[in-house]
Each structure stands twice: as structure tokens, then as C-alpha cells.
Amino acid sequence: MLSILIPVHNCDCTAFVAALSAQAAALSAPCEIIVADDASDDAAARAANRAINRLPHARLIELPENRGQAYVRNFLAEQARYDYLLWLDSDLMPADDRFLARYVEAADGRSVVCGTIVFRPPAGIAPRSSLRYVYARAREEHTAQERARAPYASFAVCSCMAPRAVFEQVRFCDEITTYGHEDTLFGKELQAAGVPVRYIDNPVVHPVTDTNAAFLRKTESTLVNALRYRDRLRGCVHILDVQERLRRLGLQPLVRLLFALFRRPLRRNLLGSRPRLRLLDLYKLGFICTLDRRMNS
Image 1 (cartoon, helix red, strand yellow):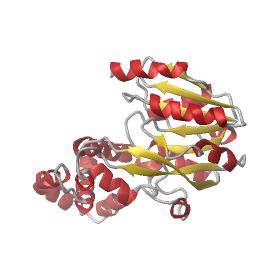
Image 2 (cartoon, rainbow, N blue to C red; image 1 turned 30 degrees about the horizontal axis):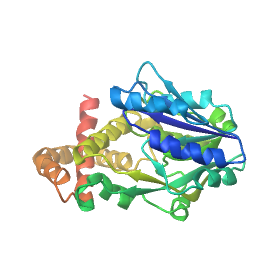
Image 3 (cartoon, one colour; image 1 turned 45 degrees about the vertical axis):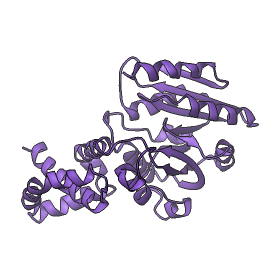
Image 4 (cartoon, rainbow, N blue to C red; image 1 turned 90 degrees about the horizontal axis):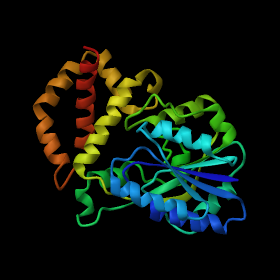
């Protein structure tokens, strides 16, 4: 019935897999959990995850080289035995003990079904000091009803179930080997193929661990991928559409100049104790306009 597929890189996900294993044992339907380590260079995390092989219904595959999230998600689907594929990120926890049961109940043979996500603030600092947490609460933490209004917009695969037949029709773009937008493109191709996407209130908990600097690096990586794959992502990444309008209006040089002048104070705020999302938006716009010139020079 259900193959649970978890790519992992430099993260100890044994507690998460143990929780899923306990829920799998309670299901009436057959279930497996496959974790693929994408050549982690954190030896402690890699060693810890080998305990997965001792859990019921679970196994770990260690890949010899780092290939990126899209490749690993495709690889995991190819290893799966069952007809429903549930992709999960590795740094999560189920919110309750009916997480897997809700997915089994939602399976209809044709739709991609996505759950919801709630974020837990980082330990030891005020929630308002974490750029990742502030961003997540404002831009990513939505109910199923809210997500259903635009089911393909900002598509995320952190908790997402698809029938095998859908995966055989739409795969992840494994040309994308760095962080960012492999799931956005997957959502766009689902829409183009006419595959229905449904959302259910079935939360996972994401404990925020990224520092402000780490989150800003990841944000920059997503912008690099947005430009690199702009022809395929156009129309589903808002900042690309804004950047394109500025380019057509001849305003990119002005944006680049302002970014050069204000990049340091913007970073100072975003890396500080009271980061502001409006300033993150300005930083992203300046960064992508500057990057566009470099990539086309």
C-alpha cells in the first residue's frame, strides 16, 4: 500500500523514522520506510542513521555520492514496492499518532495529497530573532483550506503522497542538484499534466534549526536555481516575474545600484536579532537582479 520515502543529508533522522515505524505497525495496510542518505559528510549523523536498519518496516540506503534532493526522491521512488509514494523531509516529526493513517484514508488512486506543516521555534533564542521561523510562520504555515485555494502555488514536497502512476507520468527534475525549486517545478509539471492536488489537515512538526546566516544562504541558492531554470519556472516563482518586469522596464541597473549601496545594512538586519521580512524581500530582489547580470555577462 504505502512506501514512505525519506532523503537525508547530514541529519540524524532516527527519532522520526522510529515514530513512523511505530505508526506503520499499527496500520492494517502494508507499509515500508526507505531512507536514502545522500552521501552525508557528517560522520556522526551517518553512523546514527544506520540504526534505521534495526527498525521494523524500515531500511537505509547509503548513496556513494551526493546527487541532490531531486535525484534522491526519484531514486527512492524506483526502490519502492507499493503503489502509493509518501515523500517526507528528514527533519520532521508527526504531530500525532494518526499521521500515516490519515494519508492511507486520503488515497484515491489519482490525486497527489499533501499534508500541512507547523514550525517549532529554535531552542535558546526568542522566536522573533529567527529569520527562518519568522519567514515560515508568515509564508509557509497554512491550513489545508488555505493551501487548497491555489493548490499548485508554492508547491512543497516535504509531506506529499502520490500514486505510483502519477510518478511514472511526472518525475522530479534531477538536473537540479543544489538547494531550491525542485519541488516548485514538480508542482508546475503536475499542473501541466492535469494531476489533481489535494490538501488535508495532517500536520508534521518542523523544528527550526537554521541560523539566520544558514537560511540566508539557502535563500540565495533558491534564487540561483530560479534564474538557472527560469524558462521552466516562469509563472510560478513570483520574484522571477517581478525581476522580468524590471528588466523589461529597464530598471534592473537602478535596483543593482541600490542593492550595492544597501546590501550590508540589509544583511545586518537579516542576520541580527529582529529580522524583518520586508527587508528580506528587498534583499532577494536586489540579489536576483545582480545575479541576472552576472549570469548573462
